[in-house]
Length: 86
Image (cartoon, rainbow, N blue to C red):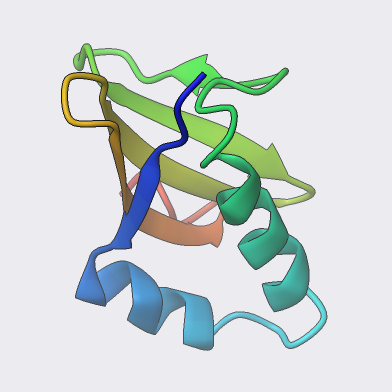
């Protein structure tokens, strides 16, 4: 199985920097794991979109899109569950 290339939107990278310091390493590890498995256990496809998914890391969420034809994952949003879907 080929690995996916991970790309961060500039806004998502900025959101990551604003998170609490103890959460950032867990978020980065979860995103890096997406390169080998784009659909880990617990992934949920967001309603209204065919290629947008989210993974849960405690009270925080990572929202991303998967482009299978070019093996690319783009991180769209990163944040607390109360804010990430707005």
